[in-house]
Image 1 (cartoon, rainbow, N blue to C red):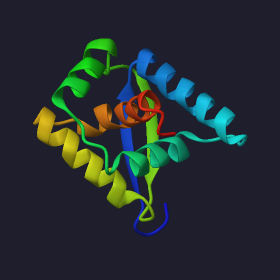
Image 2: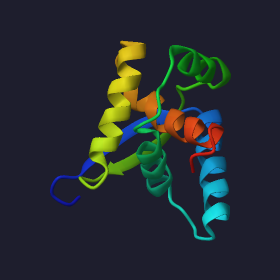
Image 3: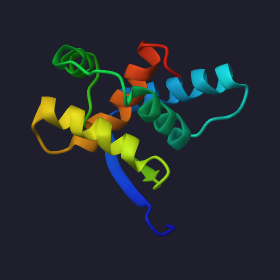
Image 4: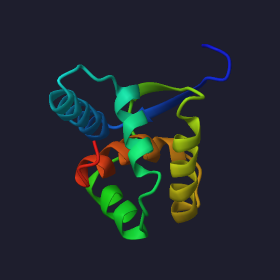
Length: 119
């Protein structure tokens, strides 16, 4: 891991894993280039930084998707986009007020950006 990078390790449900895979695939098709999970989440965070997030959107996501699971996912957050990731993390944390924000944030960012056609 390069200096300034941080690894986010989460365990997701099959449903959230499938969501991330579907959004990565759709983003890859739109750009005409293969996109990794990191590139997809990075773009989602970048596009969502000026987007307001409501409690209703978080609650809708959590009602549609089971979060906890056994699929281990690692996401490297680099200094290039850590401010966007952290800004979105703060917005979600204000709404949820619980631990485990990263576990929600990674699939939620992809879900929300896809839903609003931002990526």
